[in-house]
Length: 275
Image 1: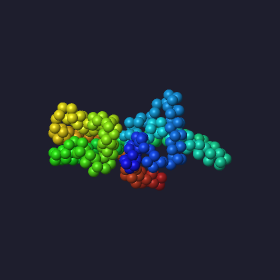
Image 2 (image 1 turned 180 degrees about the vertical axis):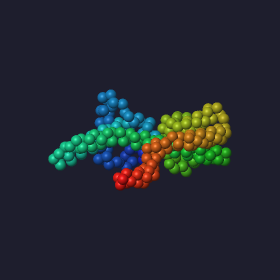
Image 3 (image 1 turned 90 degrees about the vertical axis):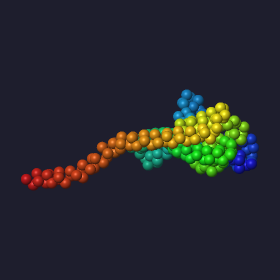
Image 4 (image 1 turned 45 degrees about the vertical axis):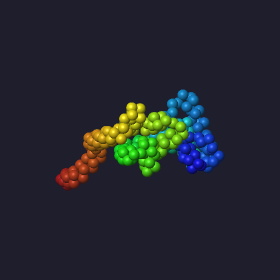
């Protein structure tokens, strides 16, 4: 029971039997509370949270609220330039280079966390899209072997690792906590807003509501998902020449021209100088 409660709390839920779960570090809890107060205070003055809760959950940060995340950004933006300022004052000089370094550090501390969360969320969603066809194939095999959809999903989720496995296990835990299959899948779609997951949730919901065979729906969905993956791969291939243009023109070609033309130019300059 305590292991299940710890798993639920890891996804950001508060269990009703908190005393059975292992307590966190008091210093970490105080720091999180301070960050939450700072984030809520800044948000209360009209600043919109730059990283919404959906983006944090997409990045796998289930237990981090937007207020806590925003508070840590504010603390980091204030702390790093202060360290540079104190070092400059201790050295006895506050040059323009130190001021520029403070400004650059503040900008980095402010924008880097949001960029990192966005990048992590994008990588997780890409992997979810990449693993979903394999999940659908396993669901087809287990459903056609005689298992129901819920049992098949449980069996597949226990054997899947990575972001997709985490999201499926969270969906199943939500069902065990009393949510219907449709509501749990809707929450899955909110956390993983990708075309493949949207098609998966829509297919399962239609199959449940219309009484259509889930196996047939999964087969059609598998074909659609693979078609979408091929289209995405072709799109990336078509974009590759455009992405290669900048490094070719501004990095490779200048170096190549220097290597090819320098001997001839050097020889001409020597002849002109000797003449």
